[in-house]
Image 1 (cartoon, rainbow over the protein chains, first blue to last red):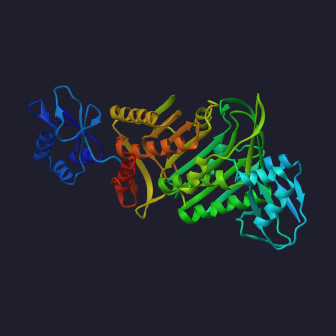
Image 2 (cartoon, chains in turn red, brown, cyan, orange):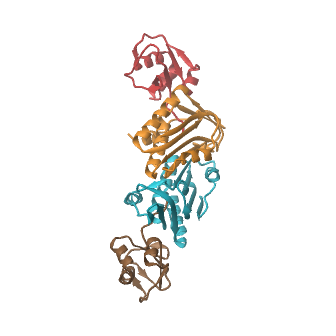
Length: 81
Length: 81
Length: 150
Length: 150
């Protein structure tokens, strides 16, 4: 599956999309941990509580179940307006 | 002294200005009572708590002392905006 | 702090006011309010609305409100423009605009100015409907809104 | 209820939006907010501000906020216009406008939309200053403002 990255996370990782090799369905928490293990900047954001996860364009919590075909995005707290 | 009237009070009394024969200084309360005794529409407004008094362009209470040369106005609650 | 205060028969160029409010680039937020004549009031069709005021007192009160707003919030610019005379449904009556560095102060100040203007500035509205003319009554909810700032 | 929602590089004709918001003569009140790029932030001169967003999600979130506002208040029209791309100090970023019969609903809804947009809509700001580029941090006061509606 692919995970979209935005803003400071995209720049820190250096990619717009991360290809992730994880069995689905899985909980958001497991997906975060899986990616953090490989990308220190994601781990840092996670430990700073500066990592939000959207599934199908809705922000979701750690318990949310990611299914095959979902659009998943990681990004920092928003700062628009 | 003269008392300016505005809006519904002006229309009810039928005059823009009331000439009032009262000894100054006097309290606002006495002035109101003096005028209400001669103009039933002022008495009605007063009993409905629908009579405001401004002295020198500031809304004042019953205790306020009216002095010679003050600009005094009677009007109903305001409804602008 | 700079401000513009007008009581007039005419309306104003709203885009020009917004441009002036936002001109200082320390301004991060501009909030403005426009009040206009509704088509219906108390279930009657409104044909016209006539606004009377007490000229010597109006500017006095509005300037006082502007000063109070400046003391309560860090504001950059303020515009108050209120019309008098005879208006039709859909005509604008009042424009209040505020600029500030941040939105909380701009929202609070604009609402404060409107709430206080509604209960303290000496304007009176007379409606013309098919039933004739009537002076509008003050609304207790406006008193409550104004008191909420005290 | 009618609404206009745009996310775009360009700014909009503010006077035209205000005319549209106030067009329905049941509208007695129009409140609008404009946010713009400040000259200074965190004591540094801002040379440019770049706004990125997550296009598929942005309209989704903003439409959801419009629906929530409609459910909470009796609104007539809503406009949300948010810019993306590179902006300069003084450039407008966001326009939120609301019309309603009375001012309380219009003020509340405009502020609700801004407070929620600030914390829920997927926009991110990167500033360019003389010290280089930096992504802005979310502000806890924005979180508090958004939570105050829940």
